Image: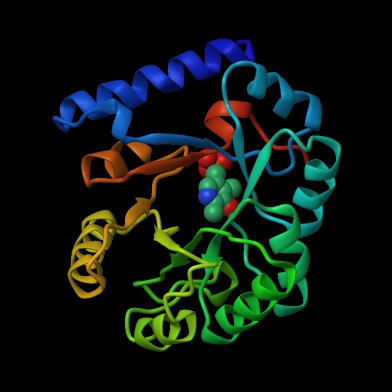
Length: 223
Ligand SMILES: *Cc1c(COP(=O)(O)O)cnc(C)c1O
């Protein structure tokens, strides 16, 4: 199947999931996840209408952004403090904010670099292996306090990678989103759902599905 065919098939599945859930398909964004995919393939997807791509590694995303400045890259992978500066320089958005010390560092650097970068808080409600990252619900107040509603880092939503076996995960996230919206007094988006589970995520209210393999095919071992 060509890339165009895979994208069309994926979009049809997304529309169907929206229909089944009684949702307007224009309310669900498809974010292509291009980690470990070649730049020519990404550019082929860009020619088919995508302008933003999710990446997991700061260096890989920075390299691609340097070669394709017309595209926007979104950071999805765990972010170390010492990579905070290149992350702000090369990514349009950061979805993996999960700790107060990282929020403080990003605020300081965003002021220094004079940039505005929408951020999403990555949450982990299931005590997943720490390697995936994510803030627990108990950790949210400290993180929000560190973020301090900084206008340079507008809080856009919540991102999560729930364990595949957890059937209630997406509704738990939707409920957390509700509580936080009440508390903060503004809307938050939900980024949840990947190749294997985006239909269930859409049924539970996801605003953005992050799809890699179902869109681009298998990832190569090399970046
Ligand atoms: C790799 C990745 C995806 C996409 O995963 P697929 O299963 O290939 O669709 C989505 N979100 C994050 C955070 C990822 O790391």
